[in-house]
Image 1 (cartoon, helix red, strand yellow):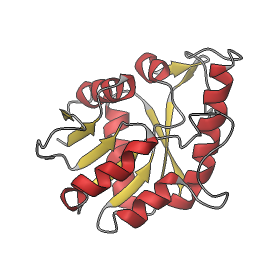
Image 2 (image 1 turned 135 degrees about the horizontal axis):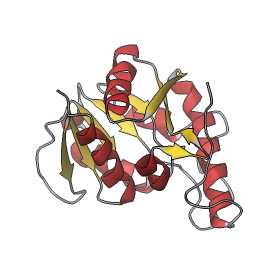
Image 3 (image 1 turned 45 degrees about the vertical axis):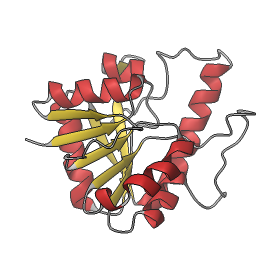
Image 4 (image 1 turned 90 degrees about the horizontal axis):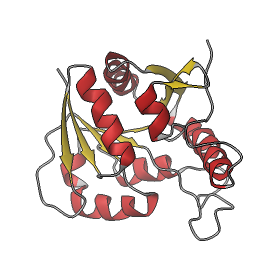
Length: 190
C-alpha cells in the first residue's frame, strides 16, 4: 500500500485522492498554509503553478527523498495567452532543479478533474501521461493510477514535461474559450 500526500484542496486534488483510495491506497490531504507533516511516499502538488515556489521554500527539505508530482500548467493567468516558462524548459524542470533530492514527475496536467472522475474522455479511457527521469518513481505513480481505474502512459524523460505543459495549456485555453467542454479533452488511444 502506498500513501499519497496531496497538497492543495481544489477539484484536481480531490479527484486524484479519489483515484488513490479507489485503488486501495491511502491519501492524506495537506493544506498549503499548514505545518502538518508530509508522510506520503508520493506527494502531489495540486496547486496553481505560482504556489510551487512557496512550497519549495517552506517544505523543500521535507520533500527530499520523495516522489513529487507537479500537476501544474504554467500559463500566464493574466492574459491566458502563453506559458510563463522558457521555450526550452518547463515548470517541472524548474521544480526538479529547486528540489534536487526529490524525484520530480510531471503528471495529471493534461487531464481535467471531470475526465479523471469519469475515467473516460470522448469514449476513451482517461489516460494520465507521466514524464520523469526516475523510472521507479514513474512506475510507482503509474501503479497507483492504474489501481484506481485510470490508464497511465510513460511519456518519457522530464524534458517531455514541456510538451505536456503545452498540451495542458492548449486544452485549458480551448475550454476557457468554450471550444471544448470541461468534460472534454484529449484522449490517448492505444
